[in-house]
Length: 285
Length: 315
Image (cartoon, rainbow over all chains, first blue to last red; front, side, top):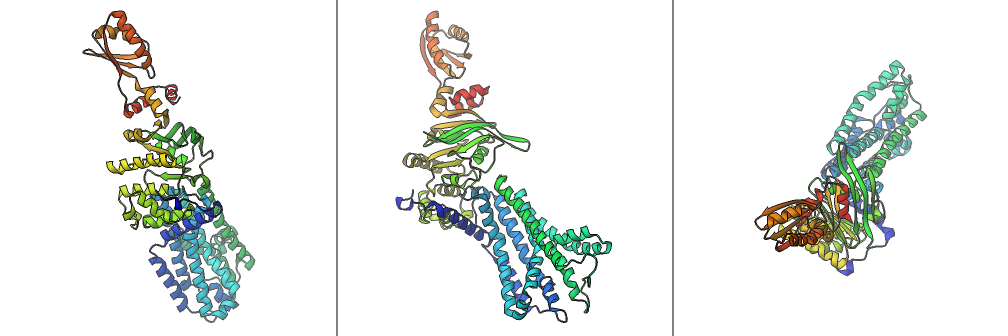
């Protein structure tokens, strides 16, 4: 066995922090061991941002509001979010399926901190890279616009991420409750495509039928649609790109859109808390 | 010696399957305790409850006096060898153990030390996923010992090992227990192996502890149910012996009688048979207990017809 010189542990106080950081390093290693997909996603994101140009002929606030929702910029965001769902599904879910979680849960680390380390690796790192890349490229390529429209850009970035974050919370919940790897990703992708198909339709239907409950629920699921509605009255004039022009029934004000945004994140947080509490208090492996 | 592990009436059900019905036993500090039972008896479920991986439906479990569920303090004091060791497969053996050493507050050099001690020095820079089954088992033991635990819980620690490696693992366990005072709880269905190393055993079957206690006491309790008596008047002596209320059967073969008694009653047989032989004028050539192997001990303990009888073994 080991010699006496190596048998002295560090003081108790530093162990919790050390355990968390070491688990995080293990998860990072698991999630990004061969980060080929992440590198391509990053290049795709940066390339798209560098080559994208701002729309012309519109109010600048409208352009800022539509920046992250435009097809060119939203696609790399989606690619990044799919990587996040993949990381949760095959990282955390893989740990359940392969039995590695049984090993991890016998380490001297509180279960909540264990899950926190896993999420920081699977979700936090990808989101940080995405946000930093967006920020750096925006500031580098169009600094004046980015600074002038910072609040609008920030609000709409958060709105653009709201639905993917909600789906991330769903993927996590499926993963923790089903303890499997493939299903959460399938559920996440299905949720995304179903939402993409129906939510825009629900807005139109809600406006047509003046159904405020349907509109509210839709905006809560995807507050980017509420912001689209709000900012659409900045763009009357040039040909519409599918948005309802001007203020119509159910078009939210900025305050209401912000409330939907907060509400959406709260729903995600509640889902996250349910998963975390289940993981800490009830999860058996 | 104080109890490191104490369970009382543990029960656990999965959907329609009842894995544990009544698991009660103790692991005393400094002892090597065996959890013996056939596959499906509930050993792994019991161990998972002890490690805080499963919650019992009822009953109590205490490890170092505390509940093991979500209890990092206890996990600092335990080393674990799981039945199917699972580690991140794409990490190098040494790299992973260095992280675990740091996590547990030890210098990373400890990783090399335990790998060498388990004969894995040459595999230290291999991916864990590329280790053979036997090497993975030894890696799991190194992983369990890296933080100088007070208690090691090992679920089938010798599975996947060849006989030589099994012997090495058992020798390691005995040495670590003797030299470092590490307490061991070892589950196995390989009874002969456990009889080599254990001081105490809990015999588990169908989710119950059928017998628990010091291994020698268990042998003593269940040892003497079969006794060979050799005499010059076998039929006559057999007839007399059959009249004893604690005798369950008497077989005659030549000059030999094979007498089966209720558990714990053989001492009375040793007292009564010479007297009976005298009464009928028979010459008694010999009277001896059939030595019981751990296999027989296990078989008898798990055939115990009542819970009371099972608990008698625990005394």
